[in-house]
Amino acid sequence: MTSHDLPLGRHVDYPREYDASLLFPIERSLGRAHLGLRDDALPFVGYDRWHAYELSWLDRRGKPRVGTATVSVPATSPHLIESKSLKLYLNSFNATAFDDEAAVLTTIARDLSAAAGATVQVASGLPAIGADEPSESIDELDVAIDDYGPPKAEHLAIESDTLVEERLSSGLLKSNCPVTGQPDWARVTLAYRGPKLDRAALLRYLISFRDHAEFHEQCVERIHADLSQRTAPQWLSVEARYTRRGGLDINPWRGSPGLSPPRAGRDERQ
Image (cartoon, rainbow, N blue to C red; front, side, top):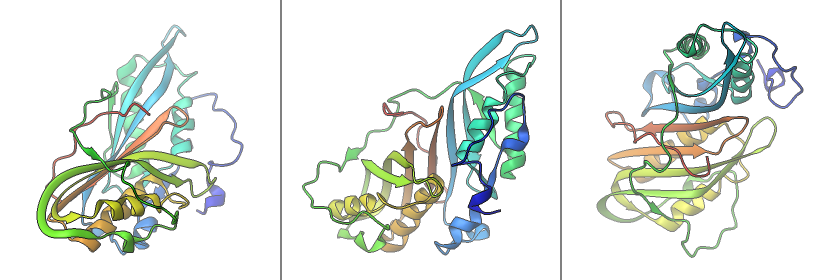
């Protein structure tokens, strides 16, 4: 399929009943090929954690019910789930009767697993806001910026060969939807052990995504790949928390093999 086949960016009738066929999977290998990555030899582990804020269905007496859900799609799945198709799919539950919330969540997990090609975890509720491990923001660095894309790995540099272990964050990450051009906003957090990063160079690099068109998941994999190749950390974790659109936000995480995932949480902007 091509981008012209995507439901994103064109009028789509509002779903009137539950319909799993609304889900649109996209091959991860398409984006990874541009980074020189192979699905059978990935240099990272990770997941795409979705937060669903607008989940509703009918009970068996026709009364509407509402809830929220957290969805985790493994980075090893052959496909990612296109965001507007996920929104439309979840909206298809609005006028459909289910026995209870458990039946709704089981159905979502089954359908997303089939679309992604791997087991997808779905749980009721959302993680708490502000439950993060502490990080140091680099956003107030006094730097001049004149490059807004495409992303340039050559911006990245190390400040010294001294090994450090630190968590850095920036709320200035912005990229664009590759189909509609709509902006995608996020805070990105990097945790690593390795040669000390040049923070000004890192900020210039992250801001160079500003006019770049790429899916959320692919942006995070690009950041992980560029940092790994240019700065050679002993280990690296990259998480981006994108702001909500259409009742959904996505939080891709990629980390060196063997790392534990970061603590699940939400940002105030989400």
